[in-house]
Image (cartoon, rainbow, N blue to C red; front, side, top):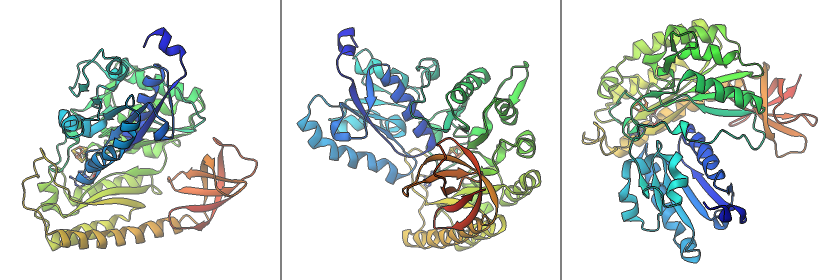
Length: 443
Ligand code: 5AD
Ligand code: SF4
């Protein structure tokens, strides 16, 4: 942008984020990159000079949302021909030029590893479609992080990509091979966030517990060791991480759950299925029993830990017996909550061409599984009533004097606290469990 242009009124950027927390993080970083070009965020799409859709490709429905949203942008583009429309994220990575062919109103397409070049693309100094996996690291080219609004909880990407190649999953193709960010960059970003008032950091990665790197002591560090280093930052009260693979739950990471008070007693550990046959067909490389024994070890280290998971029903070849095995595993573990999905065949993945389970059968299984998981969620929430928990206030509630925050176990908690501020970490007694939240009273 020329100096002349930067002196004009700020341009407005609208970003819509689909999918996972890494996309939320990427959207923030894209907003910062565009901020350096004079763009400010707007919440009003019709007011925007640029609309950026940061997309998800994990299931067919997620990907199709992009095209219906682009269709809805046609009248706005007709009204404002200068409006720039960009598609970022995993659909951009997977479909590239196809997006522009199908929707010519799209001005630029940028993958998850190239978005640091968005400003160049806008200036016409880079191709309009950028989806390669570049040699360079985007984090070396992004502006310093700016935490604009006072937000006490932040995400920090430490690892990207996945080498696991589960038979149903597009992530190894859209996000690429596993890459760990260097220790010193992670620590610098974490310290910076804390200096700006952040009290809780969630470490992000598609396979976050596969993170490894050369430590400050010259030794190879695993993820548990990284958490120990981050926990030493003064003023950082809480650490979380997501998403993990069971096979990368190293001893040191399990021990960190025992030793580090700032590491919250919550773990999202997807298992996908409780049937060994299906786990094998999914290429998960562990059995149901290995998962259960791992859970035992984690609970030995941190008995109060709340576990959550992901499940896929109707994976090709899944029988009633396989489904029953999954329900049994869920009964055995007792999850705090879980995400469950009907299998969606994704082009380019090994399972794509396999014969599908009857759709109505898969629907019925999904309902049964979700009913069980809802009962477990309710039980877990009700188990919190009467307990005294830490709550980090993240925003004001709808009622006067009310604050909303997250408990140690990541439940949303509503508290009457007229004198409290966003960013306060308080002790609260839980007095009631509602549908998807808890109510607490200040102690
Ligand atoms: N179909 C259905 N669910 C999927 N997931 C990933 N790929 C698919 C697919 N093809 C689910 C998995 C994963 C979560 C992020 O999305 O459960 O853990
Ligand atoms: Fe996808 Fe997770 Fe399997 Fe990697 S480990 S292929 S991200 S489901």
